[in-house]
Image 1 (cartoon, one colour):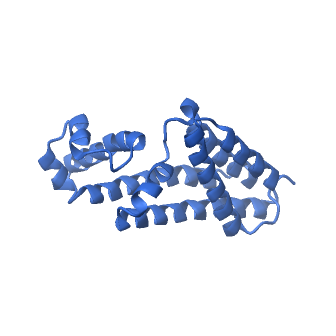
Image 2 (tube, rainbow, N blue to C red; image 1 turned 180 degrees about the vertical axis):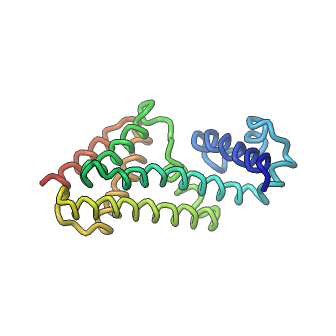
Length: 195
């Protein structure tokens, strides 16, 4: 791919992220995305065979960027495992509670229920992406157990349980338009990891 192809494709993904994060996948038409992006419809089909394939690419891009942030925490050797893990949860809390939890920034929360029955390809992309997130959280927990800053918990099972807790809290925050559920998730997480 040439540079122009990459930039236009990425531009369509970036524009669509903002629109779809706000409105959902089904309620957004390609015309809205392309008009906002300033890209002709023919160009869209040069990069994506269908709206479903576009949705997959959007999710893949979302997870690739999201995982970079967790990887940075994993590589921050100056901090203990506990500190790195709690930074992850604090980032989640800060991002999800901006604008009183009314604007959804997390495509996993926004799209999981909507596309799980709509598109198997997008469901699998969401499943695989969340599995990678849980694996990274487990690695943070494992690092904390290894350096003694976290109690001896099973990393994978703990990561899975916490991710489910925080995902549910994010959804409840969206429903109630407040941060109470996320604050409760943080309090539980802090208690779980206290020594």
